[in-house]
Length: 286
Image (tube, rainbow, N blue to C red; front, side, top):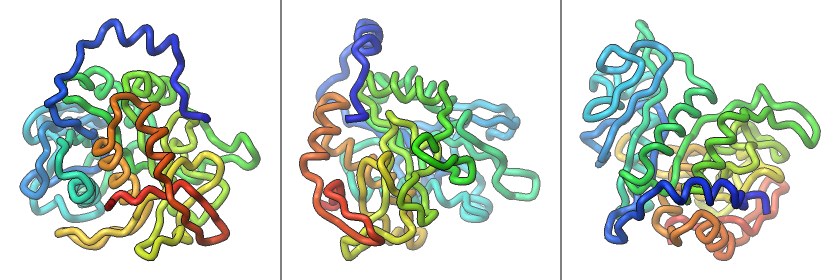
C-alpha cells in the first residue's frame, strides 16, 4: 500500500503535539479560490499569495475576511469555485468545521492570478502549524496540472517540498486529498495528485458510473460522487468529488490516518465506466 506513514516522522512529531479534546469537531482545510462566508460556515480564513493582493494589501492574512472577495466579484471568473466546494463538503458532513485557505489572487482586471504547487505547499505548512488548534483531519485541494506530466511509469513531476509536507501531515493524521483531474486520461492523474502520499480522487456519476472525463490509473486512491446541485449552481468534476471525499473522511475519521484510509478502502463499492473497473468507490452520501 502506497499510503503508509514513516515511523521516524511519527516519532518526531508526536512528542510535540498536545492531544485534541474528543468533543471538538473535526475540521477540513479547503485550499481554493475564495469563499462566501454568508453562505458557508467557515470558522477561520487564511490568505496566502505571491502578489500583495490579500484584503489587507499584503501577501499573507489570516482571520475574518482573509479568504473572501467583494460580493460583486465573488461569483465571477471562477472565483465561485471555492464557495461551491465548501457547500458540497457541508452537504456531505454537517458535523464538521471548515478552515478556508485562499491561494488565488485577483488581478486588476478581475481575473484569477497565478498560483501553483508552491502556493499549495505554503498552505500545507500553515495546516501543519495549526492542525491541533483547529482539529484539522483533512486538506481538500482541487488544484492540478496535466500538461506537466511525462509519459511512462515515472510520469509524475514530484515537488519534493510539497511531498515532504504531505508526509508530515500524514504522520499527524491528516489526509491531503487532491483532485485527479478531468482530462479523460485513465492512466495518469494530475500533478500534484500523483504524489505517492497524496490521496487522489476520481469522479463517479449519479448513476454510479465512473465518469468518462475522470483521470485515473495506479495513483488514484478513491472514486466519489462528482455531481452536486448547490445554491450557487450545479457542479460536476473531480474537484467536487475531492471536496465531498474530504468531508466524508472527516465524518468517518478513526483517530489516525492509516485507520481511516483502511476503513474507507474496506467499504469501497464496485463501479465501472470508460474501461475502468474499481472497488474503491466510496458513497459519500451514505
